[in-house]
Image 1: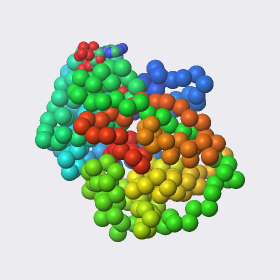
Image 2: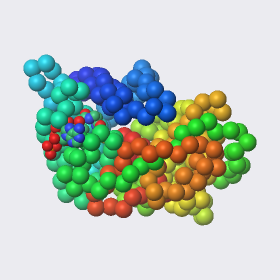
Image 3: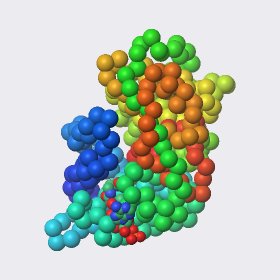
Image 4: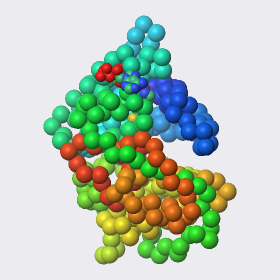
Length: 287
Ligand SMILES: CC(C)(COP(=O)(O)OP(=O)(O)OC[C@H]1O[C@@H](n2cnc3c(N)ncnc32)[C@H](O)[C@@H]1OP(=O)(O)O)[C@@H](O)C(=O)NCCC(=O)NCCS
């Protein structure tokens, strides 16, 4: 994959993930919407950054019609991460995905640990298990957060790029590999909140509409404070989501319950040679 492929791959992932959302839609939940223009721009910024730092982990598949698939993977310290994986709807289930994943896995040679935010598409899950990943079912919380549910959170302060060393240290303790260069991009894209006290450290990037994009902390109490801070950024009129919650992160389920959010299940956190990180809410792209 090269920088010239980014726009085409963005369109391909937008089409394939909308197709997946429609196929796996549960009738009691809001109807799936196509990716917004703002999210498409952010997608391109992220993947340009990944290509800059991990060109050897990013691949496209083509046939006579043009682009038909892509996989984007990263290597952070000794962890391999799959950031995007897609084959064009109508051409799935014919072995293209296997070739893409095998190529991207080569980028993780020598890394025992691996991490994937897996969809619930049966062919995807089959590929990950065949590649030796353990599938941990994931939950998400969704709902409007009433103002009166928000507690007073005292230890949290605004963060900046000067907190990157602290965040890398917290990453190493919770998920065994720092985000490194990804923090340089994320601090420019998201609001950051930080706790740095003798009683606990941690950080959260906040989604523009509230809720966490990525959260990691050295203990549950600090993680819960940070999660509340991200929920306080939501509007009481608009639904907010806390995603990729594994069973070991029950502290997040408890915050969601106290915030009167609804609990659902979706997809998996797939891991190789590591325990589910905790307290930790991964980003779907940088994990
Ligand atoms: C996941 C994805 C990239 C895999 O690409 P692909 O070209 O379909 O993959 P392959 O054909 O190489 O492998 C799919 C495997 O699932 C099997 N399969 C196909 N349809 C299936 C179904 N409905 N249920 C279960 N398994 C199925 C295939 O037989 C194959 O297994 P095998 O090689 O052991 O026979 C592609 O299906 C896709 O884009 N899915 C939607 C987006 C998505 O979920 N991406 C992953 C995000 S984490």
